[in-house]
Image (cartoon, rainbow, N blue to C red; front, side, top):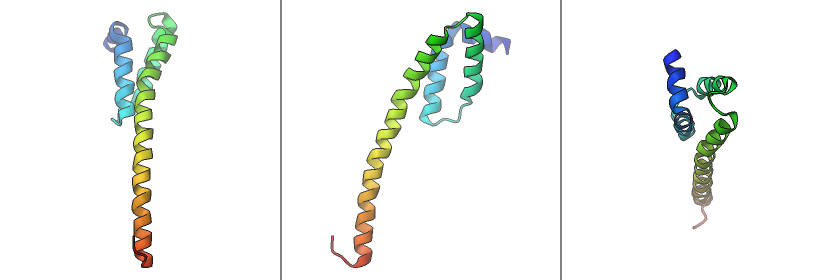
Length: 94
């Protein structure tokens, strides 16, 4: 654990950014222990709490917006497909 904390102190913001971004992208990474360790390092003054918050926000928001727009686009495609299926089932011509 000590080696991990030393690595986090040396490369903290990059590791946090990459870890949160990969987690938001869908990889099953345990983000909570990393953020707890980062918070503990912020408590000792090794990292900035504001910096951790900014890095997490910059990592999470763009990927979250990507998933939102993908779902919005995919939802429109599925809605059109369902309309065509419903009209086909009722005997209407598209």
